[in-house]
Image 1 (tube, rainbow, N blue to C red):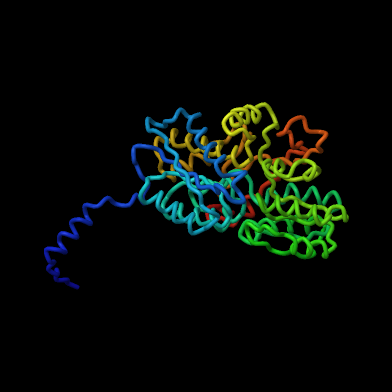
Image 2 (cartoon, helix red, strand yellow):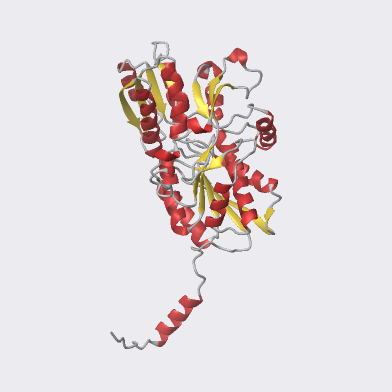
Length: 409
């Protein structure tokens, strides 16, 4: 078919010329003269204590540890508060990619926002590192070539804490669950562990994110007569639910609390008088060994607090990314993510950690217990390690992954 050109007016020609001359969006991998990292976090909300400004500072410390440059280019950090909203997350990240030349985004967001970031990262060909989100969806149906899930996930949390409680005789469970992707995933993974251990799930209730009043949910849990109340929530929601459980006399009545995602900042906020005896699973603890203490000392000097596993993981993940950029001589997402998967993580955070084909960074996890007040030697001496959970036990086997990047025999 032949097309006849349509004459353009002078105004239309001028407009076309202006559009052609305008800067193109930086949707392809950018080469802006710097390596730019975006840290998107909850600055003031329920997840701000274990993520928030502490993650931003951890990323900045990684840059300093790298000398501030890679391959002769300065390293820059931008940060933003995602306000616990998926649409805000997507809008910020899209602007970063399209107009600000951001090469990698590291998050300490909720799981729904992290899933949105992974989708956008695949579209824009950018590395996305999940440091604070937990859903296993990031390495199953939501996986993508440049997505890396670094610190923990709901499978590892359930494996560590759920298994320990079931083995101690906590067979009947009732869940109070954060009503979004993270909570749903954590409840499902923990339920799997409970049932596999010969236990039963008697019921559950879902609470909106950032709930301040857990009384109705706790009364339902109390009425269930379950031995164990599984708290499939985190951050401020976890702290509020534990405090209010104490007010209702839950544990005094014979029921126990299963803390499914806990951070050192939460134990500090609760105080050992309230938190003592809680068992939970972590990917890092500052007082674990000499290497973890050395990093914690430097972090504490800046933040006047010990790092959460998310904050420590953000430093480690950023360093691993920058090593990849240095090694391949480029910020190209495919090349860098391939390098990150081909080289082990061996630092204060993880020994012999491996980023698998599905993007899951597998490493040892730790079952810990909040100390009794009399056992604590200082204000941050809050936990003791009960057991190291080997990486191949802690995380979902690759053979069970539904990630499209995993080759099946």
